[in-house]
Image (cartoon, rainbow, N blue to C red):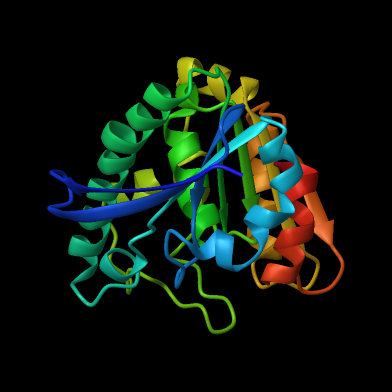
Length: 241
């Protein structure tokens, strides 16, 4: 399997950024790690290995990026700075990573994927920029970071502004009436997977309801028990990506 490591200085983030590429061709998959994960997380968790048949056959090419959770949603700065740093991170993805992917691989299908916090990042990006993606695959996601569930708190500590609103799928999608954007969302293949005992099950069901009211087709797969863990994600990945 082709494995390539890249590192460069990002002018948008003012720091060095790293990523790993697996595979030589096929649909491009942009992969966001979990809260504590780095760009090599999916390799360490065995998720890359679970997709090895598709990668080696030239069906998928993975681009595993840093998530910057410690500088954004889980940073120590004030909430306004956290969402501002996330907006900078999105600009890095849009203007540095996606052009790199396009330059390396001309395949017309781009998939965005993530687990846990990575699922939020993948969904927020895809729902905000649906013209850039053919498919969204999100595992164990919380699509409202202001939501308090079990040990998961409001990551903005009651702070709220338009950037929080427009980066939070559970908030901005109900008020989305732009037909251009909705039409492109209706063309996207959207797959959500969540455990039946996972803390964010209700949030996934809420998001599913919002998508349905907008006429946006999607799939929700509810797995038995608690599936917010790598062993479940390794089984989900070859089924849904």
